[in-house]
Image (cartoon, rainbow, N blue to C red; front, side, top):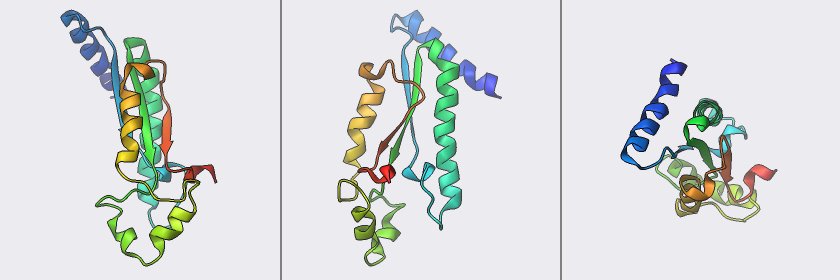
Length: 140
């Protein structure tokens, strides 16, 4: 199975090269701050997001020689449909915001720059990394 997954970028790389596009490619996975910080009521979610970080590292190692860089973004507490119930708990959003260095919770737009960077030529030498976009929450 891993071998089959490893062949996908090789095929894409060859197709791009045949078209004259060059072999470079970017994959950006979406992880979470919970990949490294435990929250008692969401263990399975945290485990799955830690697996995304491990997957990015594994794919980076398998595919870098084919011109494909693989990385992940790990957002902090950001208002989304998934996190909306936590925002409805009185004081919870304020509590989490106070635990960040930025003093606020994130917005979806906060991850946009990281995604653009990791998908760009500027990140051509960035492989297998997880970029935390969490207002500094993961520092503690």
